[in-house]
Length: 178
Image (cartoon, rainbow, N blue to C red; front, side, top):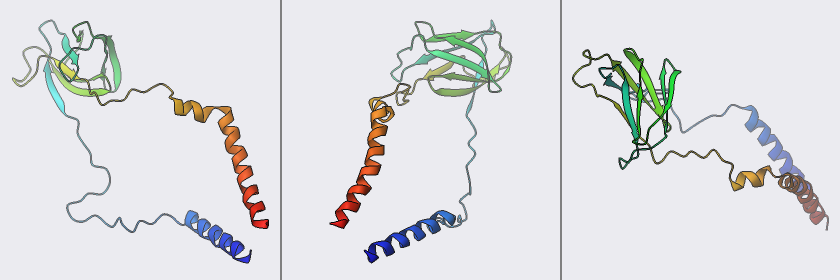
């Protein structure tokens, strides 16, 4: 019994010390030359897109095999604020008008693309005539609550955890007394 009390005291002291001392990482030393510390800034790739003669920005949303996605939500934004929300037609295409030259974000199916929009006649030769989004098949869009969530949120589960947290120490203590 004395060994058990000593072991418990040792574990309590060790745990308190571990929680009070800031974590020390021995494996992580200072960065060597050529390494950088902190986050690496990644500039988004901006593609040049020319507006059509009627001043519209056109685009399409397709699957990875090229099949158009009908009724896909598309949001056109500028400076982080949405300026147009629309849906694709039966051919997966969308058209938005009333845009002026500048940088826009085209967001659909969990993917954002930055576009530098040019007025007709001012775009560089490399500018595309539209935006094509290829929907990523690996994007998980699980907004629903699964079975595991239902089990953990059930009141009987909470009762079972509370009962086990009381019953297990009592059972261990009464087993040591015999």
